[in-house]
Image (cartoon, rainbow, N blue to C red; front, side, top):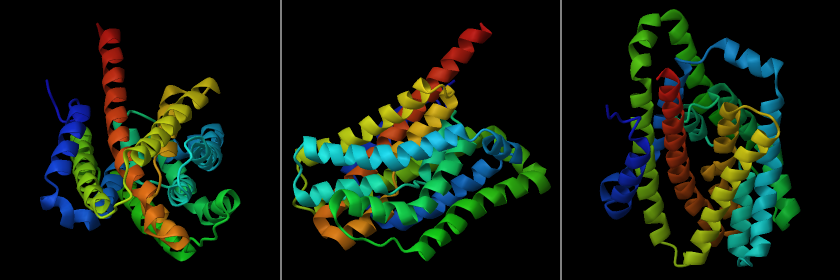
Length: 312
């Protein structure tokens, strides 16, 4: 039977194309992305248990691996690509800034859709955003010489209101309002798939409008940013697998490492280099949602296929 969850990779392509060629109806919805993500985290809270986080506390190697790749691989890979592809200074600076900004909230939802380790993904998102307060300005200064400041109170407020509170509210409802959790859980794949498809559509439409205002967009810049996203995703999956981590852990790490906090990246890019430096963050935001959606859906399809073979 065809469902939204099963057709998710196809629907990612469809909604992306529709949003790209017909963005008008979605352009005013950019501010809805964060509320939609908080609803998604609330839904994920309904399926997570305290034991999931105790497991990470007792065996933190996967969390350490993810943070290591996030804070070393991403900025160093960005810096290497700027040298290899000889990017112009403003674009190079923007790519380095993008690589230094961890903490994409959507990574946890995509990890769920990919049947990855959701608790690990959530912890990587929270710790990534928290550590970026210090790490991002230092790494940007070290690799590019540009001085930027990440406003710590705003980051902490976002961690609390956009990440922790929605997830804890979901876990609270599961514990004390079990009827709600019991009603929603059978439909969770469909609910989260629909939420992420709407977010992807809004992101693509908004990104298209932003790119249309920038004369510096070229095929080489787009190719460099997309290559960066895909290389990060591949390395962040295969390195944990090579290091002995489970497939579910590797999927969570790959999605978290290859997705960046584009809002923080754009804010820092404006500080450091102006409009041109924001270009990689805008393109990367488009690329990361589409690639993560496709990969999550394909991983889910692969896992379901394996399960069907085991049952037959």
